[in-house]
Length: 67
Image (tube, rainbow, N blue to C red; front, side):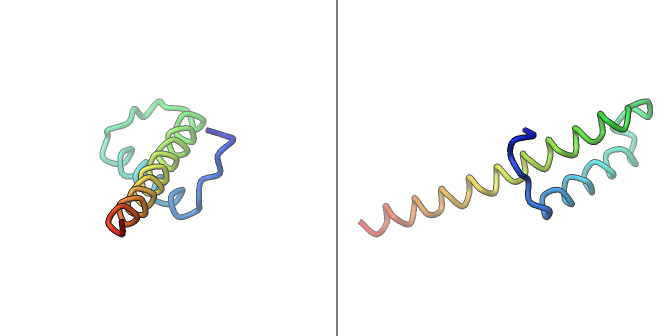
């Protein structure tokens, strides 16, 4: 994941999601900061990947409808 740059928007969403999971007790209090940082990076990557895929699919669908 470190070779893919995640946009700041998705990083903020991932951080908010990770904080909520931690605050609600879904994450172990003994997790290291490194583990939490990894989780934030991973969630940001997943969120961005899903949105990028949805945009590509929408463009592809529009092209097929034109034909």
